[in-house]
Image: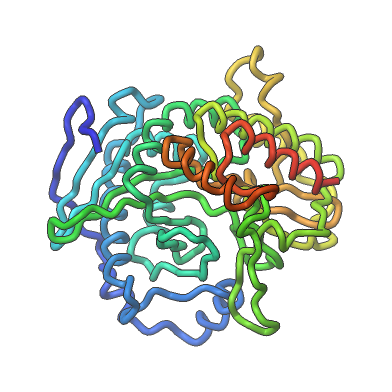
Amino acid sequence: MAAPSPGPREVLAPSPEAGCRAVTSSRRGLLWRLRDKQSRLGLFEISPGHELHGMTCMMQAGLWAATQVSMDHPPTGPPSQDDFSEVLTQVHEGFELGTLAGPAFAWLRRSLGLAEDDYQAALGPGGPYLQFLSTSKSKASFFLSHDQRFFLKTQGRREVQALLAHLPRYVQHLQRHPHSLLARLLGVHSLRVDRGKKTYFIVMQSVFYPAGRISERYDIKGCEVSRWVDPAPEGSPIVLVLKDLNFQGKTIKLGPQRNWFLRQMELDTTFLRELNVLDYSLLMAFQRLHEDERGLGSSLIFRTARSVQGAQSPEESGVQNRRLLPDAPNALHILDGPEQRYFLGVVDLATVYGLRKRLEHLWKTLRYPGRTFSTVSPARYARRLCQWVEEHTE
């Protein structure tokens, strides 16, 4: 990773008051377990003995300390060029945690209305991270914070470089389109144990939150090669994220919200095309609405106020594609149709269409003649995903 212009900083990290070891060794009550069982269906605690327990404990302690820095030095205005390039390395016992573009992400979290103490409590050593069975072919590791609000994923160095290079334009896009479907990236970090090789990881807001009543989950790319997942056996506790071919014959029924959704997909995929990015996915989940959740309800004024936050100028208001936000946690990723609530978000924004992907496109063209696959030009990728959304919504 290239050093930022003001130079990287290295400091001795503070320690959280309650360490990961103390948390994982404590015994939780039966009532807590029964209450939490349903909401954690298909998820597994990364407890002592798990192969990733040591790494996640270091991530928790490191993120607690990193967030403390932003709490002690809160942003005073929009991020500067130096904020986007800052690298802060905090030295812990046995490992180092790097925070990349920390001030820029702190400002972004604040702009989203996310309190730093909540962020610190969710990602710090207040409870074990959760793991789920991923259907991705990636070698990355995936985690959720113990409250399932935040998603963590290990990334390659190349992908991290792309994310940081695009970060100023990403922040600008979210300012211009505050109701964007793009996943909210909240932090980029590196972890190095005993001066070994760095492991990079990102933190983002989970699209599937709160997950208590979600019935189906999908990862959509708008193509067919390698886009089928064998469903879990009936009665299995495993919760799988299905893919395009599993969605055949189904429809997203949005009613009056459909036009907003189509327009926002066009705006967001156009932005990704301009970044020369491909291979992103539309994450989608279904949740049946209760009777009292249907319609606009009594909170119209409150939701209208939330929907206009972040307005830039009267000249830009016509292109912002605003909507009324539901009175629910994670409202930016929630869209209510007449009968169903849909969780929607565009994720995996770090794959650039460079030489490697161009060669992969050529190889797949020869291997899968006449079939659709993920590795195509960014323009074609964006157009195809928007077409899939148009064909599968009503």
